[in-house]
Image (tube, one colour):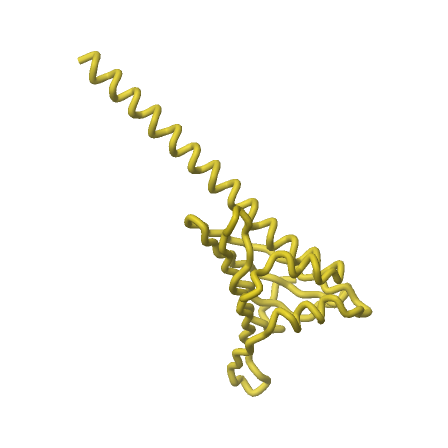
Length: 158
């Protein structure tokens, strides 16, 4: 009987230590993924296209979904090169995208981030929406491979 108690205790210790290690890995990965997103937005605020470029894979796909004034839905495909030129070109106001309600999901070497945002030109509110990122990890580095966002001016939390 004592043998079963020891076996069960040993099994429980192994199980808990494995779960704890897995949770630590997920937390570490979540922080790393979150840092990629923060680096992108810091680069936007700084007008640093090299910093922004560093978080993307070169084959990234970028889309924006919005509605015209007529209510007609639009899905626009963007290009990383044009985005980086826009970031690096001097502008009068700081581009400040504030994110909140961020959710990060990870499985192995893929991750997705879903976050609400409000975009400001300097201190002036411009628009809001959702940013949806998909990331992949290669050589222990997370990079954005897909970025989709929605844009609207109503129903925003500033």
